[in-house]
Amino acid sequence: MRVLLVEDDISLGSGLQTALKPEGYTVDWLTDGLQALHALETESFDLVILDLGLPRLDGISVLKQTRAQGKALPVLVLTARDSIENRIEGLDSGADDYLIKPFDVTELKARIRALLRRSSGRSESIIRFKDIELEPASQQVSYQGKVVNLTRREYALLHEMINQPGHVFTRDTLQQLLYGWDEDVESNALEVHIHHLRKKFYSGLIRTIRGIGYVIDKSSP
Image 1 (cartoon, rainbow, N blue to C red):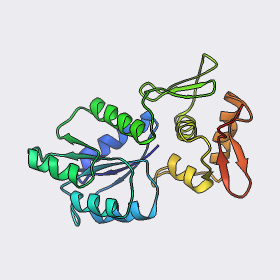
Image 2: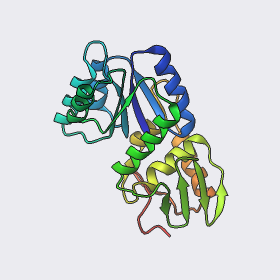
Image 3: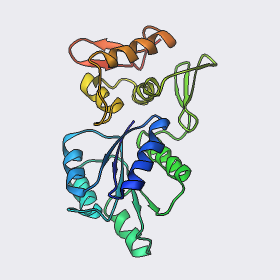
Image 4: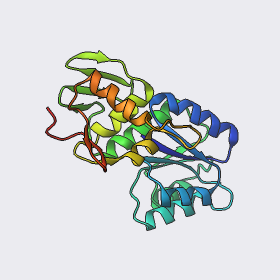
């Protein structure tokens, strides 16, 4: 899952990026509203964590313009503005959730999981596909009742793809989901992750569509 973090407090932004990466999220971090708006216009994200008091363009304006463009991705507002009027403005502008600073990181993680679950149309916390079970809260994955150990990026790739069976992902989209802007990517890194997932589960789990990308078929055996 790829998260856009928009926070101009350097200490908080760095801390959140560090805290969320071990959870399987690819976290891209920006510090002003104009940068965030451009990123949302040009790239794909699964969720946005948005501060309101941002330089150059405030968070409410980013939120309103993003919604006006028809983008429906979940937005979690983080702010020190704690009045009822501020909360109403944020929610009415298109926020899906609102968390007041200071906050507990474990609560933030739980709210992120809930938003992602809701956006994918799931009611259960566990993601099930055939004989595979994935539990986002603990990042535990099992196949045919046995725990399967995955690397952080193998987990992120599996999470993304079994959450949307039948959806064809381009190579570029998957690379963006797995690697942040500050990370170097080997040319064959994605193929290596896919190869490992096929070995750890079964060879037909992920199908290659030549010249286009990859898919987990809904009717995958």
